[in-house]
Image (cartoon, rainbow, N blue to C red; front, side):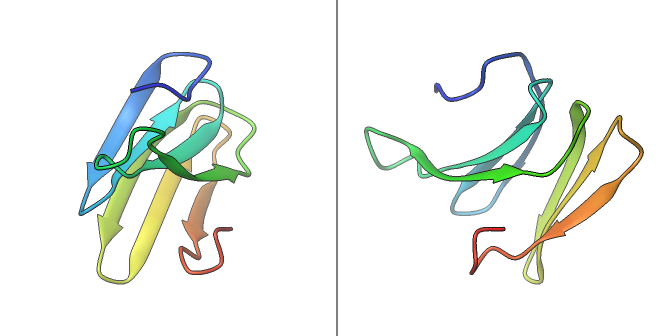
Length: 76
């Protein structure tokens, strides 16, 4: 799967695959589509090193010492 510019360092899976990368982004991949990047989340200034998805949403942790709770409905 493509989309990141640097190594993928974390993943979480539901019906969508979420990947976090050294390029500081989180991508949501719809694995059923040929162009699989469904959403892109920008907000970290360091490598995304942890992702957790549950029914409440998606959380990411980064080497910038911040955690972000993402609003998946709004894509931010």
